Image (tube, rainbow, N blue to C red; front, side, top):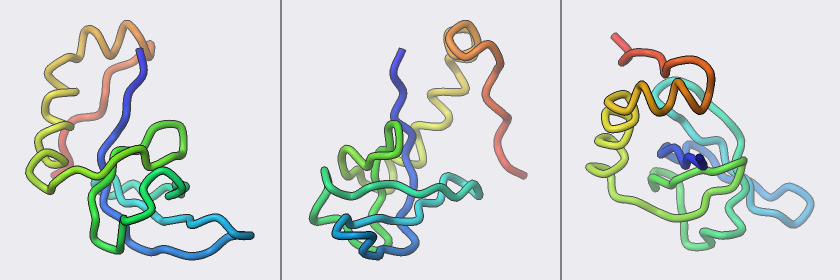
Length: 89
């Protein structure tokens, strides 16, 4: 199974000629390459897969996706070996 997780771009910078971003995934921040999403700007929601922002999504879709992934707990747990954490409180 391949999962892309939605997050919001917080910061964009140039790293040796590559557009890189700090992306927030509901409180968890990770780096992502923006080579596949050249129009993305700060505040844009993107789907990130293995460190690459592969597409832009709207905010409503980005907020709905974690709930869908949590609803698939059995499938995700079988694939990852552990369940996804619950919603942030």
